[in-house]
Image 1 (cartoon, rainbow, N blue to C red):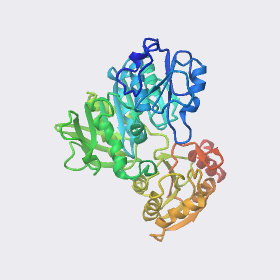
Image 2 (cartoon, rainbow, N blue to C red; image 1 turned 60 degrees about the horizontal axis):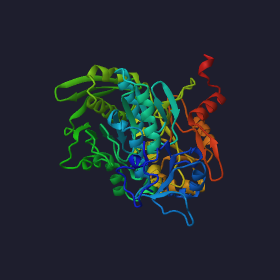
Image 3 (cartoon, helix red, strand yellow; image 1 turned 90 degrees about the vertical axis):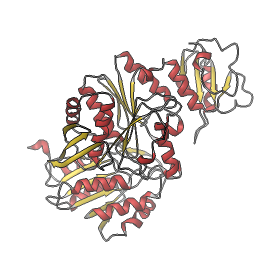
Image 4 (spheres, helix red, strand yellow; image 1 turned 60 degrees about the vertical axis):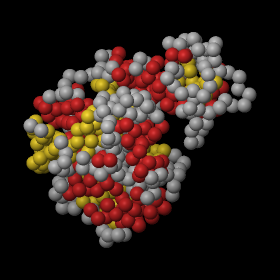
Length: 496
């Protein structure tokens, strides 16, 4: 494909050099280490590193040209094409270079603060139950047909997305389910994509260190519904019970909206909700359509996640019986209200809840399992929105019987200072609180506290397998640490 064709439709501030306009492009790249001859290199401005610093390396490796929203460095002599927006240009160029596969594949984008991962796993399970070859792109992992890949970002760069779409197309795949983060929307990683369905779960306080205000956070999420450089999605599956969700749709939009929730205003509703063991059973209704859902996912908040997945599956024209089987086949999501069982007389649950709303939902779900007491272990991340720290402390202390306050990726901040911020909220209640900055010791102290019939909730890290400090990153998995501590106390499931 010629360079002029690859960059067609993009907004450029400088012309493509005439001698390069008809040159064949062998590939696109934003990492200079992977550039090959006749590739086009994209240099982005970064918070820590200026992408222009790597342009020379790309040129030495045979790049046709460098594309950037920044001007060429002083003294630069190789081809340089300046664009209005670098990442948007890469997104459109990637889409073109790989054959606009988003128009061939059925893309479902899921956005919101909480629930994205669970909805994605549920929908992918339904699609696979329907016999589809699928891709799942999200926080925990990427799945490509029968293959599982690591997930460096919740939403990959646009070029990586285009490559994933191409790989799915090559194996005969048809459906992509992807989490779409507010960062990805704001940065232009999904710019220009044609989404078949957009799903909105909810909006609660998070990422304000990046967006600044809830209004800007909302505006970033809304880009998925408005069409971020592409047309609006054909369908939108929206949480009617969320106040931000009710503001998300645009009058006059061609998007067909399916509202889900528990309120009478919802179109797709759950009725007769009841707990079955550690899971859920309820009836789903939409007009005259009714079917019974059985899910091993626990907690009332998961009713919303299941409804969202059902709605998205319906926009794919899947029958109720397939949806029922697919939801039931999804036995759990790593790090999402995941049980750790070594035969101990108390429950241990690991959950990713790292906002005050998610933490409230998780503790409420834990209480729904009717334990004698709930002991909550949690911390707050460093270099992130400080305003949610006292809110999380308040949520934990109001709903728990015992709180164990600890660290959760302190990054460059002093863990004790983070914990002091959290204590402002904890002190609003008189709940017994244990303070232990060492997370492994905190988990052990929670287990020392726990008695028969109690429930220990390890909140915040979920599926994560690391702990980030100012000077190092170490391997740390709440699930592994819980098993190690339980076995140290003499419990061991495989010893039975």
